[in-house]
Every structure is written in C-alpha cells, then in structure tokens.
Length: 404
Image (cartoon, rainbow, N blue to C red; front, side, top):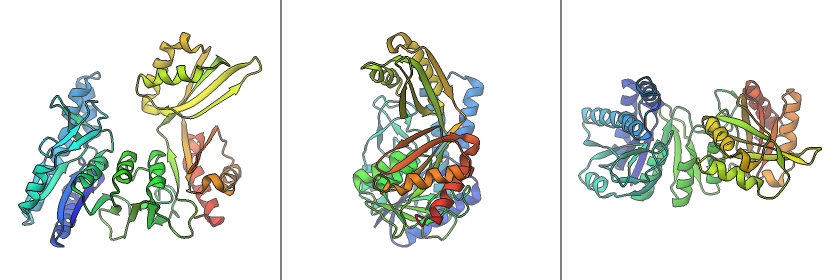
C-alpha cells in the first residue's frame, strides 16, 4: 500500500506540531504502508518571506520571489526528515528538482507538467519515508517556480496520481469538510463523504480546506482524497466521484471575501462588447465571474462582473488601456463585498433552494447586490460586513427546512 500524506502550514507552525505530524507519519509507516509526504511552509512563513521581499524591493521580479518563497517548504521537509530520523525511521527530504517535478514557466502560478518518479520510487525501495517540498516545481530553464498559494495540495495529489497511490490524505486544522466554516457557523455539520464536483465548487467559492486545482486533478486521475485533522481522531471526509451523504441536499454554504466588483457604464448595445472586455482581461490572465448587464433608458449597456481582489487594480488598468476599443463612459469598482454561495448537486432542479436562500437573507435584512446560478450552486453578493451573519442565517434556514 502506498499513501501520500500532506500537511499544511497550520499543522507545522512550531516544533511541537512538526513532532505531532511526524508521529502520524510514523504510525502510517508502522502499518506497513510505503509513505510519501508533501509539506507546506511552516505557519505564516510564506507571508513573512513576502513581507521581507517587499521591504527590500516592492517591485521584485517574480523569478526572485519564487527563489525566496521556495525556502519555506525546503525548511519544512528538512525539519520533518530530522524529526522522523530522531524517531528511528529512515527518512529523506527532496526539493522539487530532486523529486522530479517539472512545471510550466509562469512564476507565481506555474502548473505541474510531469513528475519523474524514479528518485522517489528508488528511495521508497530503500525503505525511506520520502518527504517532498510542496508548492514548487522546476521549469525548462531549470528555475524554481511556485504553483500558486495553497498549492501544496496540488503537489500532494499530483504525486499520488504519478505514483498510483492508494490514497492521498490531506491533514488540516479542521476535522474534515463541513457544511460551512465551523469557526463562523457553530452548528455546521461534518460531511462523511462529498463528490468531486461539489468539492470543486466549494473550494472555488471560498472554502479554504482544499485547493480547487487539487480537487480537479484528483477527479481527473481518480485519486481517492481523505481530509483529516492533523491533531484529532475524527474520521474526516472522503472526496470521491459522486459522493453523496444520505439525507443532505446542501453540501455547503461558503463565503469568499477575496473578490471585487467592477462596473462599466455607457457601453453601446452592440455585438462584440463582451469579447472586447474579456479579451482585455485575458491578456493579463485575469478571470471574471458573476457577469451581468442591464440596458439603460438611452439604449446603452451597463455591465458588471467580479474578479479576485488581488487582481482588481490590474483589471482596471487593462480596461482603461482599452477604453476606446471597448467604448465605456465610466468605470467603477467595489471591494467591500463578499460572495456567499450555496452548493448543492440538485440546485438546478430544486426551486426550493434559491427560495430558502433569499428568504433567509430577507429575514436577516441583508441586501443582495448580484445573483448568479449554475447547475450546482447559487451565489449572491452581499456587503462584506454582512457576510458572516448571512452565512449563519442561511445555514440555519436550510437546517430548519431539512436540507442540511
């Protein structure tokens, strides 16, 4: 049996937590499993390194930032190998190059292209626990690249897929996947099992337990994912194809605060407008969501959409650069908003879901700024100060209606 275990930064924040994680790795190895471990940087190390870089050069190149940020994971894997060796295990730490992780050349947001598993399998055959630095790869120029924030999960799933692992275990600071963030909604329920598609939506819409790309990768390669607490004994949550929890219609209520709304006014009501808007954003690799338009009394269009808050300034710059080509009269933005989403596999065929959502917000006197729906979720924009209160009200209403 081969198991990939991944520990996030909050599970490695200090020596005692590293020793706790090492104990769980030891127990897995003692069960007879061959073990590969992927690690994130300790605690807030990545944020601290970014702050350090900013103090030296606020406009540092992304190549040098990647060189700096990769230190965090390499620190974690070396310390973990030391902790396991102290416990009497054979263990070896590998950086991305040593682990054979090839990636694209986009600094700060690279994609894994291939994993040459020869070195990892060789070390496993020697009886080693193999500990791999997450969050990083090596591009065709032999430069270190990072895979995007939270992408230690991506490394773990990619390793599991490449090694044909029996299971990929993601250890976090919560006891699995819940119907809402239990730190915000005290009566949130842990899900014993959830489907890939619903988990992808939850991750994309603000649930921080798993990184969205990692779930998509797991679905593509059929990797069995289990989300567990790094400190508890709870059974966790299994993520698999068509995972269903009997009696549950709602998989989750999520909040995404990392968004901003951009509005363009006074655009001609003519073909090609949306193409010009989205092509302008695409040149900067900026994605937009929750797109809407309205026709004004004078026959012009006003359009709105949301982007990641971190990309708001770049999006506004891109649109202003193409102002003449797009033809808008004014641009505005709003960053003090949040997206609240209800995820359900039956959202498209169950009219009760949006009705209950809107009733909950009405009862809580929370205003809705925008609405978006899909086959699997209903999302609304609310004021950021109302977001947590909205999540509690909505979750409670669905519990009372028997949907959770």
